[in-house]
Structures are given as C-alpha cells and as structure tokens.
Amino acid sequence: MVKVTAGQERNVARIIEARIASPEDGIYAIIVLPGIKGYIFLEAESKEKVSLITQGIKHVKARAIMPVKKEELMVHLTEKPAVEMLSAGDVVEIISGPLQGISGKVIRVDKPKNEVTIEPADAAFPLPISVPADQVRVVKHKGA
Image 1 (cartoon, rainbow, N blue to C red):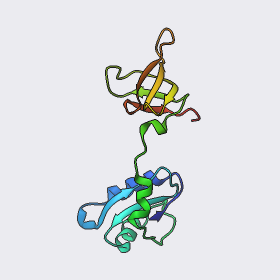
Image 2: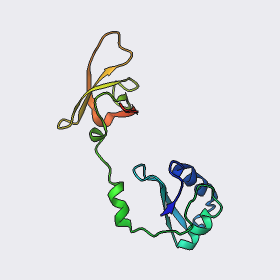
Image 3: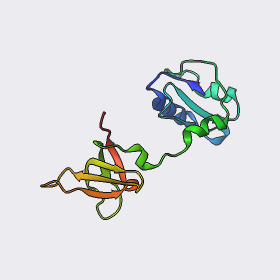
Image 4: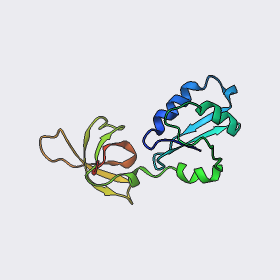
C-alpha cells in the first residue's frame, strides 16, 4: 500500500504503469479502489521494488511502504450486483439488447426482479421502459 495525495490515485497509478518496462521490474498489479481515497495498492516482489518504482513521483506522500494481506483487499474487490448501484433519479444508458443506445432517467428500481424502469430522455411523451439492471450503465448519479 502506498499513500498518495487524495484524488491523485489514478494519476499516480498511470505514472507507475508507465515506469514499468517489463515483468522483471517486480511489479505485477496496480489497484486503485474507488472507495479508498489516498492509497493505491501494488502487487510486487518486495517493498524495495515498490520504493524504487515510486521514487520521485510528485503525489506519493509517505516513503514507508505498508504491506497489506490479500484477504484485506478481497473485501473491497467483491462485485456488487448492478441493481444495488442504481437509484431513482440516476441517468442511465442502455448498453445491450434491442434498446441499446437509449439513455434516460431511472424512475423505479425493482431489486427482487433485478429490473429498472427508465423514462427515455429523447421520447416525445413519457414512455416507461423496464430493462434488466445489468443492461444499463450509469451516466450520472442523482446527487452528482
């Protein structure tokens, strides 16, 4: 685990990725978890390899590299069902099926059926459409 400036996790990960020339560098994976601000996770041979690859990067805060057990990370890596991520008022786009490409506002989420009902944005009149939750992608959350 490497401490970085909050909000710069992706930038630091990209810089590290650009510095890795080959698998012989000893860095195997770079993980940026959206729920954990200010930290990135590297799978590496040793702490020394991580220290060398992060040396001189502007937004890396702490020089001390902290080891983290795989089990601690697995809690954050479990995939949540798509229906859990949706709420009424979100703007979504249908990404598969016969209605692919249509975007609209979520008016209802039916978790037991794993369905969302959306109202297309470009429709001339309100026409609710129910589609499986895994066929939509959130474009904008209600509060954002």
